[in-house]
Structure formats: C-alpha cells, structure tokens
Length: 349
Image (cartoon, rainbow, N blue to C red; front, side, top):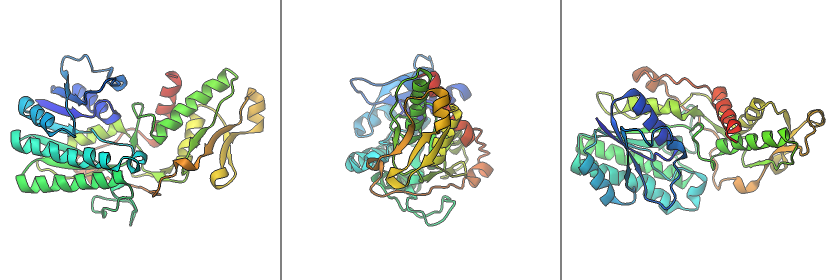
C-alpha cells in the first residue's frame, strides 16, 4: 500500500505520517515544496524511517502533482497542504484560494487522469460555516464563510463533490473543527498562548522582566480538539465502503479567555482579569507577585491589531455521525490538550 501525504511539515501532515507508520504497513510519500530552508521540526520521528520517502511537489504546480500520482500510483492521497492561517488570508486572498481550492482541483485532476482508484482526502474546516445559523453545526449546516480562508475551503468541498459524482472517485472532504497540539504552528493563537506561558514561566523562575502575551478577541469561542485524535478520524473516513463527508469535533466550545486561564493554571501561575474592551488585561495578583518576587505583573493584554476584519464568534461541532458510523472515539479532552501544549513548551523552552 502506498500513501501520498501532503503538508507533512505542519501538524496534521506530520501526525498523519506518524499514525500511518504506527498503524499500517504502508509506504508513505511525504510531499513538500522545494524551499531554500524547510523546517523539519515536526518530522523528526519519521524523517529517517525506511518506510517514509520525501518527495517534492506543489499544489500550485499541476505538472508536479501529475508526475507524483503517475509515478507512485498511490492507493491514498491525503491532502493537508494549505495556506492554513485564517488571519493571513485577508492579506493574501489569491494565494489562499489557489492553494486551498484550485490546488485541490489539481490533485483531483491528477488522480482522475493517472490513478482513478486512489482514495482522496481533502481537509475542510469549520470556518466554512462562518456566520453560523444554528448550533451545533453539522454536515448539513449552510456554507457561510467569513474569511477568504473559509471561502477557499468551501470551494474545495464543492470541488470534491463534483469530482466524486462526475467521475465516481472515492473523494471525501472532512469538516474539521479547530484542532491543536504540540506540533501546532507558532502563529496560531493556541500555540501563541502556550509558548507565551512557557516564556513567562521561565522569566518568573529566573526573576526576569517579561512582556505580556498580546491577543485579539478574547471572547471568540471555538470547538477545540487534538490533531492526533483527528488523523484517526481521517483514516476512518478514507476506509468506508462508500465515500461520505463527516464532521470531526469535540462537541464542546471554549473561549480564548478560558484557554488562557487553563494555560496559566497548568503552569501554576495565578492571574485575574481586569479592565474592559481593549483595556482588559490578565495580571498576577499582588499577593502572588510579592510571594514570588515577580518583576512584571501583566500576563495578557488585548491588542486591536489582532482583531479580524470579520470575526467568527462561535463554532461548535456535531460529530455524532462520525462517532456512530465510523466508530471514531477521540481520546484527548480540552483540559488535557491545554496541559499537553503548555507542558511541552515549558519542557522545550
């Protein structure tokens, strides 16, 4: 069995490779773009595995995708490559759409032309739901994106449906709600928080000054899970008798404010909120500061530059069909996710 996995430098692609090496006998072909300085930090566990091979390709280059599918003849093509940062999608909307939507079309065309028996996975997002009409959001919720990123993922979903129905391909588009972990990119808010907590933890430990973590909308609510749970669900989607799209989610929602509180609690740093709006801050108590001889007091503050042009205030998934029909059973709770990320960043500071 041969599997192409794209986006292996990111958290989902890397976790997918680790999952496949552990749970299958497949030969894994990990696709990356040819860049001058690739970052393999997420690939250390498998980069030298004899069942893993690094290959070069680009979602913006149909010839490279055609060549890979034609030469490898994969049984599975799992696409996690993307412009995956929502906030950045307003700044580079065309690149976002080209990678996330047109790139999926290029993958599907390569499969249609050179290996139509290959099973294809497209990574969707809860950002497709955007300005939600009801909660929790299931697979039938209308597409209402509020960002170029969300629109690009919605387009990819429609393309997968068109190719599935037009050419009888096994192609699925998973609607994945927010998922994080120790391999999460540092530009994402959850990793920004966990690494910020680790930085402040060490500053307190060595009696040094520290700058606060700067965040945008603290009341934005998300349905957070661990990426390691999601790759198991993706593999189950790809191995059904008939192709079908599913939602993967924790079925819980938590605010960024709550993530902050639990992250600092994991590091045993006591804080409290004060102020309102852009003046709101999360600071250590006077008693805690005196007791620990802390030289700075503000842990988190609001910076308006991190507000999005159009905010998605609430995302809450309904993954009941995936749990019942696929037998998918996520193992990592929200509290465990936060503690895993914070402890990892403290240990590796």
